[in-house]
Length: 298
Picture 1: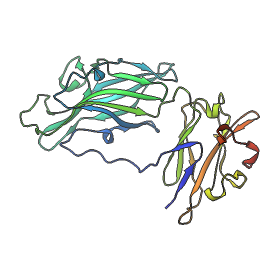
Picture 2: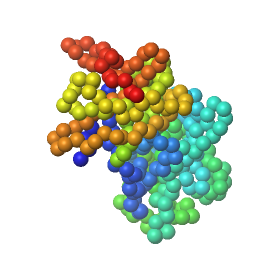
Picture 3: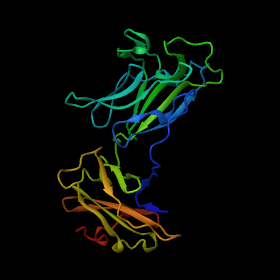
Picture 4: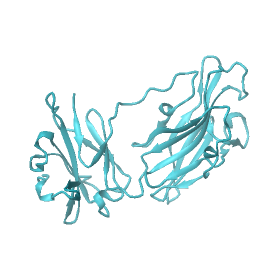
């Protein structure tokens, strides 16, 4: 098994694409489709169907601004709840969606933003909806909060008497993570079987920006001697200056460690003469690691 410890990084393990929820049950985070890498869904809170007056689900905005200055909104179109981004130059792009699901009984496992009303048609078919106050943006952590409703309906939109009594659903607040945070010193790696991916921080290691990154691997047993770190990827991206929020991929060339051992990965960032690769904590004091100890990346 390939074990890795990430230094100055929050390391999350990727298990591949999550399986969708089961038909005849409320849709959940596994049913969201993300068209932009790095975005993930988590459930923040749920309220049973009989509880409809929870004030936390009925307060927010109909659009928000993320930390890059882009506008974010949620719309309901053709039975599909979509997250749309509009950049400063006015270009709109669909970045994620979750879609109603027809089940064999002819019912729908449905989801929509709370307090939705269509401009015409059943299930907003062919029409964009008018939303209530369903959005909030956690600027510190780069997280979009969305208030939704999960329910079971007939395909024509009416509430059926034979919807399973234990169906569940109700109010559902989700958090979409992966947006550029307000201030970020740490990187977060998302490992796969052969790659490491991360989103460029707004202020990598406290620097105003980075001209390029270098990624290394090493054996945990050799720490804290970083002179033995081995280059994995150097001077990337090679063709442009990395931008905050950009998603970068590094081929993982580190070997599988022997049983009982583990590897680490560490990334340095460089701008001008400054090079940083994390911090150390000695006798209660935190300071930057000595960049001279990290080998040059050829």
